[in-house]
Length: 189
Image (cartoon, rainbow, N blue to C red):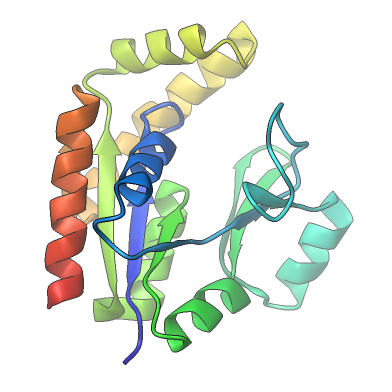
């Protein structure tokens, strides 16, 4: 039996990685994390092949040209993120469920490719202002980058209606519970 694909997307800073981590830590749902590729440098504490596959821009673009990505986006000018086809296919062919933490447009593209084998979940911030405050408090980005991320978030939120489910992350534990239930119900189908 093939595994299923769980796609979780959100604007940057909405807690999607935290939600996925909490669900995986609970151990109530058997999931494997899909490691995305990017051409950005690792942040403090990130490890190649665990958090992302950190590629040079040339290597990333060579993989794009070779059609090795199931989805990729230039999320910001010169900044690429993508999901390697080999990661997803290997996992689901081995009967494992794979969870993807990916860009909003990328999530829509993967759903189109895999259809009913995939479920899409959009994590919504309680408000754009709350998101801005989270990004500031995170302390990893400059004011210019935060401004860019907030503007992009407003755009990405417009795609929430194209997702199978939307979960508002105004309380982390409640959001984790809701997302976990969606995933359990989908896998049980």
